[in-house]
Length: 406
Ligand code: NAP
Ligand code: ZN
Image 1 (tube, rainbow, N blue to C red):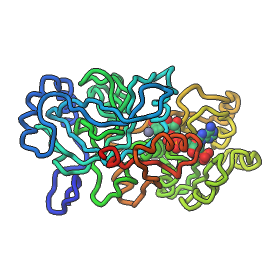
Image 2: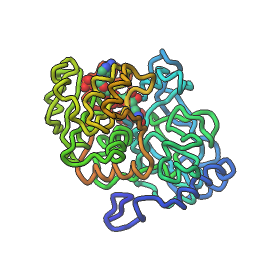
Image 3: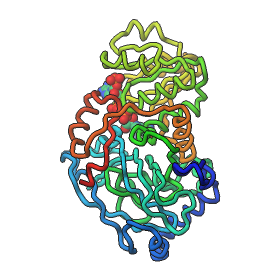
Image 4: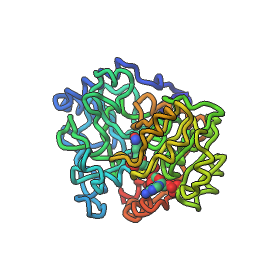
């Protein structure tokens, strides 16, 4: 059966792109402004697609300022280059990073360029492919996570760590766009144009809406479990049971780790148990936090805001690590003495590379791991943002992008 599409009778090749393909793609990207003319010929063979060398105007949902609600707008996508895939977006998850970006909450390190179209948990159907594309054909299902480009030549890119590209990865939204100039627009839109190397194959039979969140929430929590080698029987803590947190629980349970959730919301205790956590502790339960000191092999923090971290660092065993994937501004409340005496580590981690993203998608498909989602219309997005911020989402909003096309 083909790993690229839902067809049992054909095989479109291996799951993982090899390094040479990746570099070719990077070269293709660098030359894309020159090559769009060439792409037109390739596109002529396809059906139901925007033809021509001009940028494609697509419907989107975004915001014009940090304080405006999101609403409908038109944005431009570049024409499909030789290495590009044109995706008709079917579903897009709502990550808390979308909200930080729309509201310019990372102004000090990553100021938002407006208009801003967030969305980086994208599943779409391939509508057209460039002349050099080998990984996808029209009709296949592809996924796009948080990145759409990187230099492809630095030591981190060559080690499949495109997210840590030394020349700056191009993120799916709010990144300078080296191909089209301007800045990138995300998945709250009708269509995306993405180099094939940054499009993830979605296995046949996947629940597409519930798979979308794996492209950010999934890889962001899977990557630290891989890097810090979380193994069966080890004790792992997950702080914050939201979009990232609930996937972290499911991934850790799949590894047969012993999972404890640390939540501020009493109403989530039953859900954490259903997802496989052995124990759930409220932040307010200082007795439990003290009892659990020095017990944990790994702790993953998904909390979107800074908070006093030392009580959670205290949970770690000697040499164990708390990986912060949540709060990305100034951290709070660390005690140097306590870290030194316990030889405890605090680390950060950001999403994962393309190969590792493919790995988590395949891993979850093989184990039927998917997000708990609330499917919404794009017109309901402002209410959804409020519910994410108030910790009310159970556990990821996913936009049915058909609502944008109406
Ligand atoms: P989310 O769905 O809002 O979940 C965050 C959870 O943290 C909430 O459900 C809540 O869980 C807890 N929480 C929220 N506000 C809190 C507060 N003020 N104090 C204490 N706990 C609070 O968010 P998400 O989409 O999972 O994203 C979480 C964070 O990760 C965001 O900051 C996002 O930008 C970041 N992120 C980072 C990466 C990366 O690569 N490093 C990737 C994606 C997202 P309880 O109700 O259980 O307490
Ligand atoms: Zn995200």
